[in-house]
Amino acid sequence: MFEISIASRHLIYRKRQTFLSIIAIALAVGISIFFTSLANGSQQLLTEIVIEKLPHITVYPKEGDDYIYLYRSLIDKIKNDIEVDTVAYSLASKASFSFKDRTKNVLLKGIVPKDEDEIYQISQSMILGNLSSIMGGKNVVLGRKLANDLKLKMGDNVEASFPNANRAQLTVVGIFDTGTPLDEQAAFVSLKTSQGFVGKGDIVNVIEARLDDIFQSNAVAQKLKSQTNYEAEGWQETYPEIRSSLAASRFWTGITVILVMIVAFLGIANTMTMRVMDKTQEIGMLMSIGARRLNIMKIFLLESCILGILGSILGCVIGFLAVIAVGSFKFGIEAGGEEITSVPLVIIPMDFLTYPLLAIVLCLAAGLYPAIRASRLDPVIAIRD
Amino acid sequence: MSDKNIIEIRDLTKIYKNGVDVLAVDGVNLDIKEGEFLAIVGPSGSGKSTLLNMIGLLDTPTSGTIRLKDVDVTKATPDERARFRNKELGFVFQYHHLIPEFSAMENVMIPLLIAGKNKDVARARAQELLDKVNLNDKLNNRPNQLSGGQNQRVAVARALANSPSVVIGDELTGNLDTKTSNLIYELLRELNRKLDQTFILVTHDMHMAEKTDRILRLVDGKIVCELKRQGDGFIESKVCDLGEDNGKIRRV
Image (cartoon, rainbow over all chains, first blue to last red; front, side, top):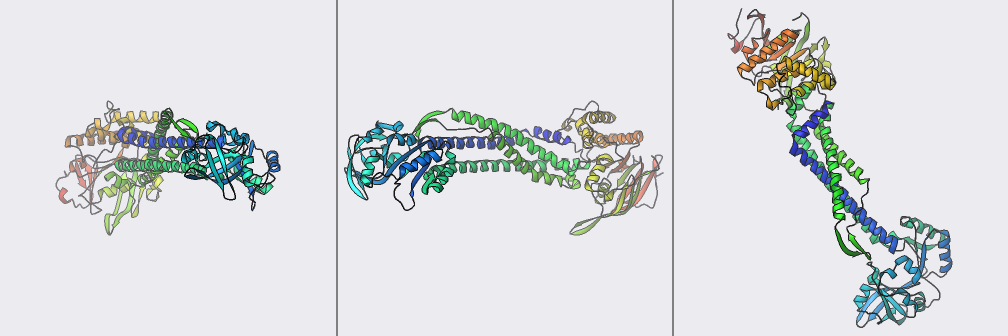
């Protein structure tokens, strides 16, 4: 195939132009791989937080009801009918906490510490006291930010007031720091204490469960809803900010990939257009000695294809090295109640196939118009040019 | 030279339509014999190159026919014309138009590779041709490492690669000094004699034209004079309007 020897010779003899084109493609592929790894990493991190520290399904009272009355039989049904790991039940209500001259709105949750812990792992996040202390009377455990805002210390008595109940004094017996929004909104008391405030007997208003596969949560919630008539939702609905954060990270990665690929595309299109202009006489000569239009097109498409392949290979190396280099950079920040010591990066081997293929296809597309133009040249005019 | 016509041109006309119609070639009739060494002369804009481009299947006539080896090539599809150019025609231009990134050998190999010959066959043939044009010691030199005359000899070798029926040269010494031009013409003459190779050459230069067997003078797209070699001189085969070239030609 003489086209490939002409194409490769063109590339070899235009070293600087060729080198710059390869670098443009390599950067596009490398940046795409790096940012995708970053998005994959943050998705994994968020997923881990969801898996470990949040309920995957939340069940609320039936429509029109304020409470779940026969919650024990509902829990049995959930445990028997649907494959769930862990179930916790609680009675949550809005309250207002006042201490000295400060007041904050709080989500006050009456819980069974052992069960709640299986879902939220509060015990692991306790910085003062322990969660099970709430069982010994009118005690409360609250988030670090909430405690700070109210200037509460261990042993302080905070006044809780409710929309439909009497005020009560609660003693601070523990402070937790989960790194989640719970830290500035949530306070835990025992289920009994909470039921006492509400005064409607043995009731709850939230049942939370964990699943083996978090991405089944919406389906399971739907199933639960249709079988029991109770309101149920998956974590994506309960925590829309996590879903939108995942979506945003995917969106920005997508934008980055599109932008760098467009830049590479324009670079190649420009290079190939200049090549065709430079080689007009040569194209005329090749036509005069019998090259067909298809042969001419092939020469220039092969050139852009070779640029795409070489750029992609280099881009994979750059992307991989960037991931390794940034991934090995150590630091310590707190996020989601966990210490993160390095940038979360996850390499998916498929990316090393997808992005190079995308780059090669783009190079071919960028070379297509100049190649077609080259093949349509009038040999008589081309030779004279 | 045989008596067989390799090219038969009938009523060949080319009109360029760029706003106004320009009659570049006006009803030309011409037979060219196998092994003939022919020059086409004439002032600038007389239609020499247009005629040559049509014979070389680079351009299409507005009307009339060209038969190459008894095939009406005016009706050929673009791909068929490309195949004819590759197999039956050889081109040498004013500038050598060699691929600068390729060696002499590789440049000569290209028409053979386009024809689908394998590399070894193409290399052997290229070597043989470069030997014929006395460049066997420059096989691996690139155009920038060769002189103008040497490059033009590589271009001649390239034109001969697929043993074409006709080699076409458009002002092929227009860019060379007289001494080198003479050497190129002597080379072509030698190839014409040895290989019975048909050459059609367009030139401004009457000295070069005189080295051929027949000279056609084209003015305003018409053949106005035909001179045929007889011994060392030329005889007019029909009434001639030789214009400014009159008197420059050695008559018998």
